[in-house]
Image (cartoon, rainbow, N blue to C red; front, side, top):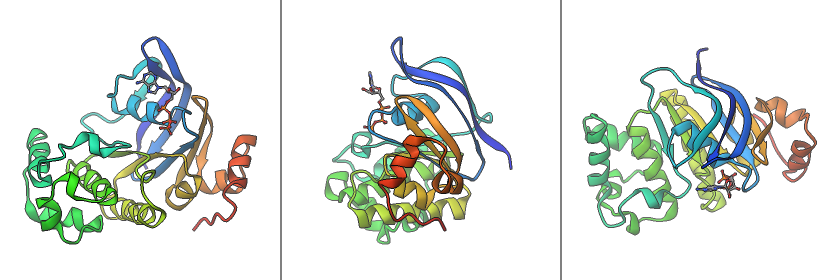
Length: 240
Ligand SMILES: Nc1ncnc2c1ncn2[C@@H]1O[C@H](COP(=O)(O)OP(=O)(O)OP(=O)(O)O)[C@@H](O)[C@H]1O
């Protein structure tokens, strides 16, 4: 399997100050990776450094992806990336146009349906303020997916959702990965979500990657004390 993302000794932060330090890991194409860590551990900063936006500056190391690959990011609060009073259809058309992708209604509706938005016509005619948090989150994932990213970067996409809706969004991300083979890199503070979704898990604390490896190994045989304690706080994990 080809490596689609290689991070070598990366340090990055804001201005001159690094908030993530000496991070190295690789992601194979088509895999699902979850980076888990408590609030402030640097997960969003890592995603922003990979995506190259959000004012994050790289102070050391490298981020390698294949040439011409598009990195799609679903931010923590997608509300901020949409105009609340314009229809999703207008905003999706605009996003596709600026990436030189044709708006094909069948393709758009199919993507919305994979994400559980079965009444795609209604969703497209809606404005963000008219939809629930869960629906807006799925519209954000759908819009990013329509740009055909090689890697889908997801920043805490379930944190604002109730448990049931969060579970649905995770199922739908798994479906996207299965149907389209999209590599997914998701950051979350929820080890339970990582256990459901990830092929590989990285554990971050205080800007460092404490351990990174196959999900089964991290969940069943963690090497780091911090990971062991995190696992104790999630008592009934099952790895399928
Ligand atoms: N725009 C910014 N300017 C300066 N410092 C920032 C900025 N954004 C984040 N930080 C700092 O970087 C550190 C890591 O924050 P980051 O948002 O990456 O953590 P996180 O693990 O994603 O947290 P959360 O789960 O709460 O989103 C924190 O100390 C935070 O205060």
